[in-house]
Amino acid sequence: MAQKKQNQPGQDVEDTIDYLNLLVTSGLALGDMEDSGELLNMMAETAMIMGNCEGCTVYEADDGMLRFKLSRNRVLEARGVKAALKNYTLPIDLKTAAGFAATSQKTLNIPDVYSLPPESPFSFNPTFDVMTNYRSRSMLVIPMCDSRGKVLGVLQLINHLSSEHFTGEITPFPQRVEAYLKALSSQCGVVLRNLRMAEDLRLSRIETVKKFVKASEYHDTDTGGHIERMSRYSVLLYRELGFDDAACEVMRLAAMLHDVGKISTPDAVLKKPGRLTAEEFEIMKLHTVKGYEVLRGADSPFLQMGATIAYTHHEKWNGEGYPRGLKGADIPAEGRVVALADVFDALCSRRVYKESWPIDKVFDELHACSGTHFDPEIVEIFFDNLDEILEIKAQFPASDPPAAPTAIGVQAKAPAEEKKDSSEQVEAVQDMKQAS
Image 1: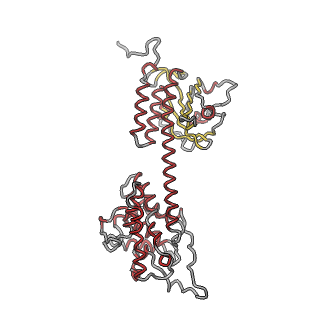
Image 2 (image 1 turned 180 degrees about the horizontal axis):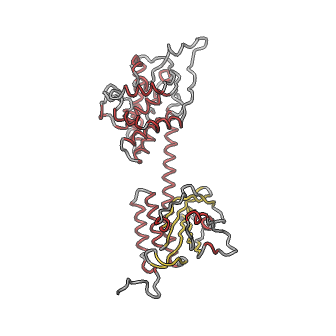
Image 3 (image 1 turned 180 degrees about the vertical axis):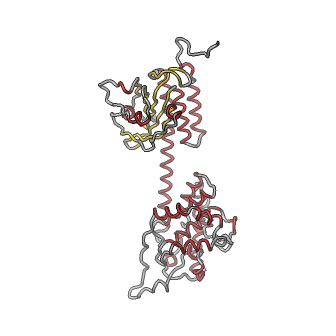
């Protein structure tokens, strides 16, 4: 019987692996693949093919620690074992193989981690093996460094196999494959760097938006986590409408900008503790137009969405909103979502010109305004996800607003006699139509 051709005498399994093609393929993927997590997983798969090994772990260097990013192990995966390594970290020091590689910037090729020489500065922790009934033996640990020598992370391969297709006995990693795996680790480092830059950019954007919003509301009376709550309500509703994670991340930032136009509203109107006159309410309504004018024309997706939201979050489903009197589906989904999120939070919050409403009364009002003020589908989504809505509300509790200003020697009127209708309230509830 003819047998499958095996490695010939003098021919190692490494001779059958097209390292250059694997490197080129993974390098091209760096520019073509948008999902960084998927790309990192592909890098780990490529590393295991190159190393013809059972497992691969990727660590990211962060503030003196190596943080676990990803792990693959064919043996454990075949057994359906998933190790809880999500929050696993190691100090960057000389006590572990990964920490030693990151500290020294030297590659470690260890034949058997259970037989380290007595003079070894690092040791092997068998806890993971014991937890998963696994046996680590040979290990190749490669530091990932950028062009300036900064350590970005560590690529760790486990249990090299002597035959093709991940079969054979466990043997030490051959020296000849180290150069290829070092090149791959550099590519993997680029992925980690890009992930870090993307996360830093995301956090920077959030911080910038928050500071922008804080500046625009510096003279407003809306306090106590309103922006955080309503942006999260908006993301929840937006996601349930069918928008993906990327769009929801844009919504999270854009929703925070809904009232940025209030920066142009005079204090005499914005801080007035009493009811607005018809003329004052017309001035208040201009914040939608002003916000749109500030944000429109930007290249950034979240600023573009922010312009749309600023312009349309006071439109009504029945066409009686402002500033353009749009009706039904002519109102962008972003505006319809934020309209409900904004009003819900405004009614639940105490302001200088009003007390917070009892939650049951707020729910009744939202039901009553379904099909008139609000898109009925979004109202239904709101109540279908009420538990999560209330979790958000509890996570960012409101703080009391500052007391309403009063003239010296003049006693403030009772709250029941002197309340101002905010732009949110005027557009939300029936008993505030006097100001519209």
